[in-house]
Image 1 (cartoon, rainbow, N blue to C red):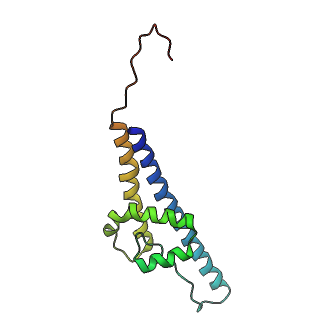
Image 2 (cartoon, one colour):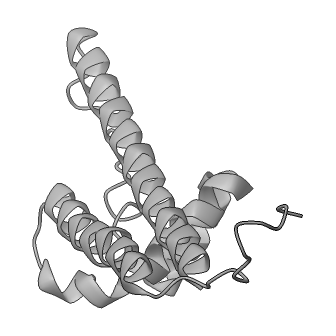
Image 3 (tube, rainbow, N blue to C red):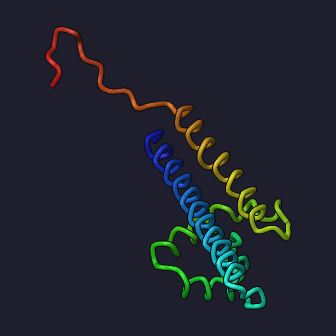
Length: 138
């Protein structure tokens, strides 16, 4: 049982971490595009912002837009993160999308990652059949 809990904790941590990495890549790409437009003298040209799409656990309308913008693998990871971050999204009401992402991600990693690994270590392991030292291991 401990092995299963350990695998689930590692999987949940990987989903949260990958989603956070993809979010950071999107934000850096958006910042790069803003800087390029600024240098080219297109200050008035609007830069499409993904802030409404990058919030954890978005509304259904935002979810449909996000599904069209992302690949299926990325959407699977983001959907997993939405489920794992849902209990923590109310704890980070902010206008800053980084705060809205980092607080639920950090709490999710603590609860599901660290907490899951601690639970796995706390669970008793299955004991193998006891053999006499004189019998060959089979």
